[in-house]
Amino acid sequence: MSIPTHSTSPANLQTRLRGLDFGLLATLVMCLWTAWPLLQQPGLPNGTDTLYHTYRVAEMDRAWAHGLLLPQWAETFYYGYGSPVFHYYASSTYYVTSALIRLLALDAVGSLRALTTLSMLLAGGGMYRFMRDQAGKVGGMLAALVYVYSPYLVFTEPYARGAYPELLALALFPLVMGRYGRLLRGGGGGALVLAALASGLLIVTHNLMALVLTGLLAAWVLWRGITRQVTAGR
Image 1 (cartoon, rainbow, N blue to C red):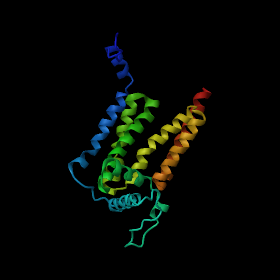
Image 2: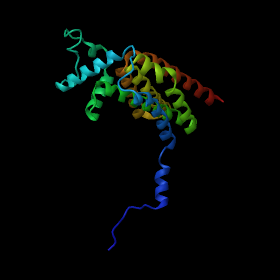
Image 3: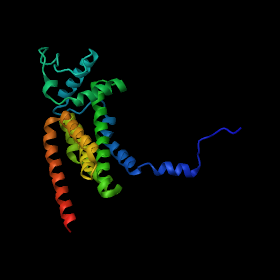
Image 4: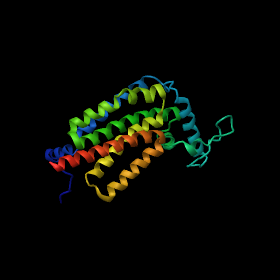
């Protein structure tokens, strides 16, 4: 009686490897290099907003520890008087850091270090996938590296300013563009829902940056519509 075994032939291995997107893997590896300064030094850079966000991360984690998953009031802020910061400030970044604290056993500072690295990977991977559909794998890699290694994204946001919610919003933006790109290519109702959800995620990540990025998104959608009309009229 023969025992069935999984095929490990070279042909089967080649089929599996063919399914991998090596352009995406190479892009993520090159984007991971942006975390090198964080690996060299402990703690966080002394950015203009770093301390504020560290306090907010710690306060959100404290609320979760007390069973408040959607806190509106930061009880320990302003010498114990409290602050409604989670009520008016887009707070999804702090939910992400609280999840990282629990999943990876980190503290507030460590969660922001991890968030910075994840944001760079998300920005690179999202831009690669967005541009791959329009310019191929090489074009996707070039666009991703230009985006991630732009001075504002790689230095100003995480190191000079410490504006982690803005950094995460910029990391999500290529994914939002990709969703609208699928919608413009005739994705149907499902693509419309996903595009709307992507825009909503951008808003709850950083509401002010969402205004700027939505303007850029609208300009791009308008440009695509005009170029499509010109191409169809030829």
